[in-house]
Length: 101
Image (cartoon, rainbow, N blue to C red; front, top):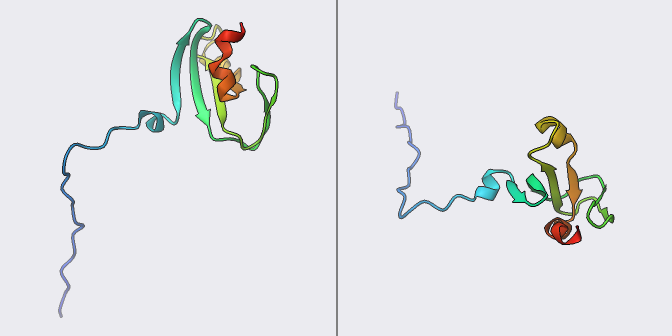
C-alpha cells in the first residue's frame, strides 16, 4: 500500500517589518475623546437600518448613512446608563459641536 506524504502548509518568511496596526480597525472604530463638554466614547458606524435625529442640527440621519455614535464616558449614573443615553450624530455635526455652544 502506497501512502502519499502529507503536505505541510508553506510558511512564508516575513521580509521586513510587519505592517503597522490599524488601531481604528482593531477597536472597531471606537475611540475616546476629551473635550470641554466631558469625556466621550465615539464610534463611527457605516450606517444602520434605522433613521435618527442628529442632536447637532436636528436633521434626519437617513438609514444607511455613515455617521457617529457618541456617549459620555464619565456619565453620572454609570457606564450602562451612559451607553443607553448614546446619540447618533452626523460626523460634521459632531466635529462642530464645540462651535455651537
